[in-house]
Amino acid sequence: MSATDAQIEQRIRHIENGLVEVEPTFTAILQAGGAWPEKKMALPERMAHYKVPGVSMAIINDHSVEWAKGYGVTAADSDMPVTTETLFEAASTTKVLAAVIALRMVERGQLDLDEDVNAQLRSWQIPESPFTQDQKVTLRRLLTHQSGFNRPPGGFDLEEGSTPSLVQVLNGQAPARNLAAAVESVPGSEHQYSNFGYLVVQLLLEDLLGQPYPQIAQEIVFQPLGMVASTLAHPLSADLQVEVALPHDEEGEPHRRAMHPTALAQGGLLTTASDLAQFSVELMRTHQGRSSRLLSPETVQRMFRPELDIEPEQFLGITGQGLGFFTIADGQNLYFLHPGHNDPGANSMLIASPVAGKGAVILANGFNGGRLAAEILAAMVREYGWPTVQYAAN
Image (tube, rainbow, N blue to C red; front, side):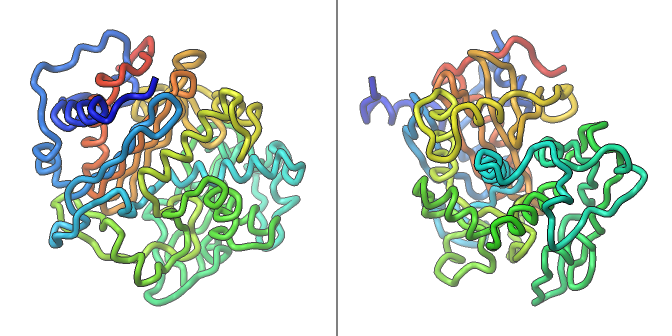
C-alpha cells in the first residue's frame, strides 16, 4: 500500500531531525541490532558542522522513488537554493553506468567478459609487460578492479583550455597532465581500485560502437529511463552551468572548475538524486524479474554476485565486489551500492536492497559530504526499517 502524502511528510521530518553520529561505514549503519545514539540532530545543524552547503537526496520505497528533496545552497557564496533539479557530481558512482553499458554489449555478444581486451581495442593497446605475460586484462577484471591498473594518484588534470583525447590521457601525454596508465600487478592477483581501469572500459565501448561516450550513455541508459537531467557532456552549456552545485573543500570554500572533457567513465557524471534513484529502481526491478529495459534479470543478478570478498574494515564497510557495483551481504539482505568522491569536495552515495525494494541516493557538495551522508543514511535506515546485515566492520 502506498503511503499517503501526510505519512511521507512525517517520514521526511523524522529523517531531517533524526541524524545521529555514526561510524561512517555501511556495515556499521546496516548492522543487526545496532544501538543508535539517543541524541538526534537536525540536518541543517549537521550541514553547518561539516561545512557542506548543499545536499540532495531521494528515497526509494517499495521499488519506486517515494520522495526527493534538496537542502541548502549550490555554493557557500551564493543564495541559489538546491532543488531536486540541481546537478551534482556523481564522482565514482559514475562507474556503474560503464558497467551496465558494457554488460549490455556482453548480452549482445559484442564483448566477452573473459577475453583479452586488447583484441577489441582499436585506438590504443594495453602495453605488454611481465605482469601481462601470462594473465591478461579482461573486461571482468576491469569492472571488478582486478586489472592491475594504477589509480592514478593526483587525478586527471589538463592544460588550461585544452581537450586531450582519451588516448592522450591514457598515455599521460600533453595536453593531459596525469601519470600514464600502467599495469602494476598481475591481472587477477589483487583488488586495486582503479580509475584508469574504467577509462579503458570507456575506450573499449567507444571503439566498439564508434560513438563518443556521452552519446553512448544517452542512448543506452539516460533516454530509455527518462534521466533527462543527467549528462556526461563537458563543457556544459550556459543554461546548465547555473544548475550545478559547486564542490567545496574541507574549509567550506567553493571551487569553480570545469569537469574533464574526455576522461568520463570513472567520475564524469553530473546528475540529480532523482535520476540516480530512477536508475537504481530499474536495476532493483530487473533483479526481481520485473523489468528488462537495460539488462536481463540474469545479468543484473550476476552484477550483484560478489566476484571477490573485501575486508569490511578496508573500504567503508563494503564486503563484496560485483561487476561494477559493490555489495554487502546476500540473499534477502543483499545490498548493492557505490559511493563516490571528487576532489576538492563532491560526494555521492547510491545504495539499495533489491529484495526489500528500499534504497537511497544522497549527493553533497562538500569535502565531508560522505560523513554527512552516513548520518542521513542512518536516519533513513531507522525510519524505513531497512534489512539488517549480520555483522559490522571492526
